[in-house]
Amino acid sequence: MRTITRCLIAGLWVLGAALPAAANDIVIHAGTLLDGLAEAPRHQVSILIRDDKILSVESGFATPAGAQIIDLSNATVMPGFIDCHVHISSQLPSRTNATEYWLTHSDIDRALDAALFVRQMLQQGFTSARDVGGGDETVAIRNAIADGKIAGPRLWVSLEPLGPTAGHGDPRNGLDRGLSHPGWDQGIVNSPDEARLRVREHKARGADLIKLMPSGGIASTGDDPHRQLMTNEEMAAAVETAHSLGLKVAAHIYPAQAIENAVRAGVDSVEHGSFATTQTFALMKAHGTYLVPTLTVYELYYAAARDHPELLTPGTAAKELANDSLPKKNLPLAVKSGVKIAYGTDIGQGDHGQEFGLMIANGMTPSQALFAATRNAADLLGAPDRIGSVQAGRYADLVATAGNPLEHPEQFQQIA
Ligand SMILES: [Zn+2]
Image 1 (cartoon, rainbow, N blue to C red):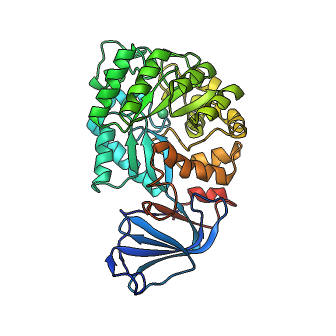
Image 2: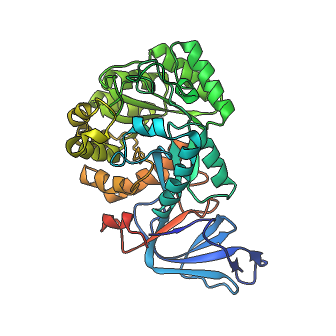
Image 3: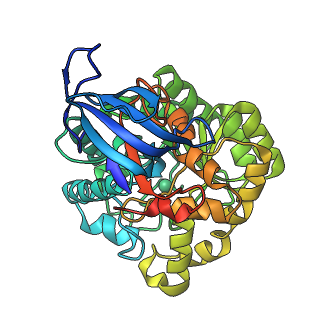
């Protein structure tokens, strides 16, 4: 996989004699183009790039005088991939348990870990990502990438997930209540008024979107993934306030009834959605709500629970083993329902391309998986005019791989 972004390319290109020379112009000769718009591949295409944007996409191999030509005539070019559910400062569960990591790493340690993990993400072909649940370090990393200080995907960040005391977003749950960290309180909401206040605080601190934890979760001590823990009124207040500020809302939810309540409250995406039913997906489809299935995290945690439960947060291995195979079993139902699906792994460190294989092994076509990671993801982020497709006006966030990944999906993970 070759990743081409504004960080990695520079050159000079002149479009024939008709246009004046412009610095930093480039033409890419793509043997095959999967543009993120049409299902059918295009062959022998020139992608003309000026500065960091795509100027045009033309049939045939144009060779304008003075242009820097990038020859990918033996490769397949695609829009840069987008991971809509990451935690940029999280280590893999096979390295250490999350509670231990929290207690042994400062905000600065987490920022430095994140700087490493986002660079690895970019090298895997992910040119944009949505972080749904970090602290101020995620804002700092987003800004550093945007300013060109470090390499990484364009980031949209949510700050701490909003949820109740003793919920999936309460890091104190199950710990000695004497332990404290300022960030542990910044997502706690126990009333509609607190939900409004938190959303506004997160906006002021630099959040691009809001993350809710309406139900319990799995990789956390002391809460139950089968229960709705936020009230409908709290969800509605959070969503209304977020939308009034131009922020979208992602919601971690498992039970069908809680998903349906959150969809009616107006959330923009359901993360995980493990216990959704046909009726739930029909409601999501009617409201245009995205599903982000995050199969990768379940794959990793299931293996950890089976082989190394000591590496998981206390008391969570049994929850993992009981629930982590459900999202895979449920994906064919989601696909059949026609609900919109966006790509998300729920990891920071690690292989973000793994979700392609899991989606394809569990009911999606390679083309559907690619759309989930490109145009659908861009739509969920609210940025289809900037990313997610290869067409004029979009950022030149492009990846290339040998062969055709629609025929050989392992190519989605092939790094040059
Ligand atoms: Zn997550």
